[in-house]
Structures are given as C-alpha cells and as structure tokens.
Length: 255
Ligand code: PLP
Image (cartoon, rainbow, N blue to C red; front, side, top):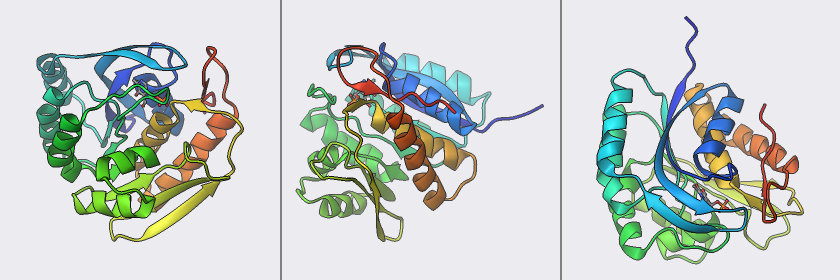
C-alpha cells in the first residue's frame, strides 16, 4: 500500500478558500504530501478582511486529535490561525505527543487589518508554544508585534532567544522594492532570500508558504531545501494568482 507523508494542520477556515486550512491542503498536496485538517476556528470573511472568528471548543479538538493520532502517523505539524488562548495547552500537549517538526505561521492580524490576537494571547503563545516551535514564519509586522523589537533581524533574534529553533520572517507586506525574507537557522546564522515584488496584494500567501515548507520537511528535505523550494512554489503560485472577489488576489498554482 502506498503511503504519503502526513502533516497535521491546525488552522482556521476561510470560506473564500484563499487562506487558512484550504490553502494548507492545496499547498501540501502540491508538494506530494497529505494534510490532516483540524479546524481551530471558523471565520466570517471575504477577500478584503476578516469580520469575525468563532473558535472551536478545545474539547472537540481534543477528541478529533485523539481519534486521528491513534490511527495516523504524522511527519510534521503545521500551525496557522489558532482559535483562542484556551486551545494553547492542548496544542502544546499535541506537539509533545507527536515529537515531529513544527512549522507555525503566527496569524496575529488579518491582511485587511482585523486583529486576531490580543496581548494576553501573545503572552501565552510566547510562553507555552514558542519553545516548542521548530520554524516560526511570521511576517515582519508579526515579528515586531511578538518580539517588541522594531528591526527585523533583532526581532528574529529575540524570538529565537525566547525559544523557537528557527525563524523565516517574510517581507511581502514591507515597503521594500524586492520581497526580502530572512531565515535565522538553528545555529543563529542569518540568510536573506530576495524575490521580485509582484504588482498586487495577496490573500493567504503566509499560509501557503508555511504549509509548503511543512510538506517538504515531511518528505524528508533539509531545512535549506524546503525553505528555498517552498518560497519558489509560493512565488510561482502568486504569479498565477486570480481574483476570487473584489479584494486581494489568491494563489492559483496547484502542482
Ligand atoms: N483567515 C484565516 C483562516 C487565515 O489563516 C488567515 C491568514 O493566515 C487569514 C484569514 C488572513 O490572511 P491574509 O492576511 O493573507 O489576508
């Protein structure tokens, strides 16, 4: 029987399909792996912004996880938008239970501006989850908000000091002429990747990148390979993006 590497995804649901769990499933399938899709929150949103988030009860998530993990081996965990601070102890326990690499995209605010975290959530996230994360993929604004530092490299170093093994800080929403993504590896070495800036604004780019990295790590690639190839996949998907609504564009390439 053929087996595909499986990635446990804990992400929010975007009914528009551009971000969240649907972006995870599409990006992971495109790398040749399979997503186990646990939904942390439902949302009310369009291609412009998130209007409301409704968290899934931790007890339901716990039941889904117990049922699934007793049956399915997982090679990596991918975290996206989380539903509430009440879910964090369960997610931390799940990471400890699985003992596999964790790729986490800390979704602290929607691209349209709605806050999806408050200081109490961020504080608990830093204490309970950050030390368990193998690769954190914040955008530069999220790295500043989580670290309290204003400069990208200083923010990444501060978050690494707080416990996550590696970071990839993305610059897609920064004002630079090129997109500059900064990888801080487990030895503290910084490496910058530069990509041509596409002439549009995108919805779900961060979810796609983090999920593609998780898929490639589950397939056995090194961090250097996975981070480089997942960025290329994301860039190519965004170059083929389409307008689903009247707001920002969504990644299109599936394979
Ligand atoms: N909704 C969900 C469920 C998400 O996971 C995210 C981002 O990861 C968003 C909305 C916001 O996406 P963006 O900031 O790319 O518009």
